Every structure is written in structure tokens, then in C-alpha cells.
Image 1 (cartoon, helix red, strand yellow):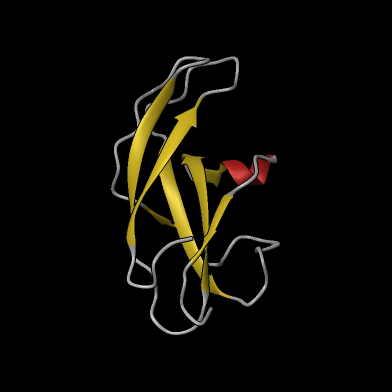
Image 2: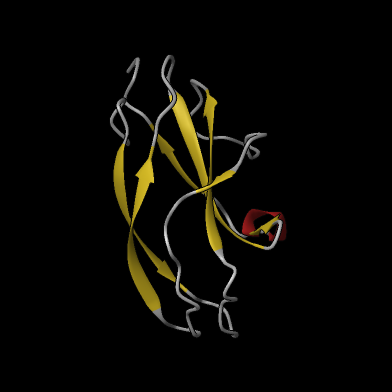
Length: 105
């Protein structure tokens, strides 16, 4: 759960694949108003987060702090995914991390 006014959220990313992550990897976040417990599909507007990601080898991890800016108004859900080039990992079957803000709880 993310506070209504936004926050930095600690996450640990681990490369569970069999190849090193590409150098152009980035974190994308999209927000959508919803009273549901999770989003079935990605919001229309996924935007990159300003955080540097190393090209992790298989089995390597990195701890990051993601700065999140929660939209004002109703309860919002964040859809967080990685992307290489223009393709989010969620388009290849990797699940998104989803977080809700605390507004209107």
C-alpha cells in the first residue's frame, strides 16, 4: 500500500532468467482509478520511473527505491513492470507488481 500523497517504495529485483538483462532496461509505472483489488490489464499510460537499473546477470539482485507520485482523487492502483525497448515484460507473461494507494479506504 502506498500513502495517498506518494512515497518511495523499496523493491528488490532479481534476474531469474538465463541471460543477462539488457542495458536499456527500465521500470514503467501506470496508475488507474479502481475499487477492485487488482488491475486485469495495464493502464493505458505506462511511464518510465527515474531509477537506474544495472544489467544483472542471471541470479543477481539489486535493491532499489522507486519514487512514486500518486494521482490525486479516488483510490488508485499502480501497475509496475520492467521494459526493454518498447515492450513491457508483462506483454511476455511476466506479472506486474501492483500497489494501491490509501485514499478512500
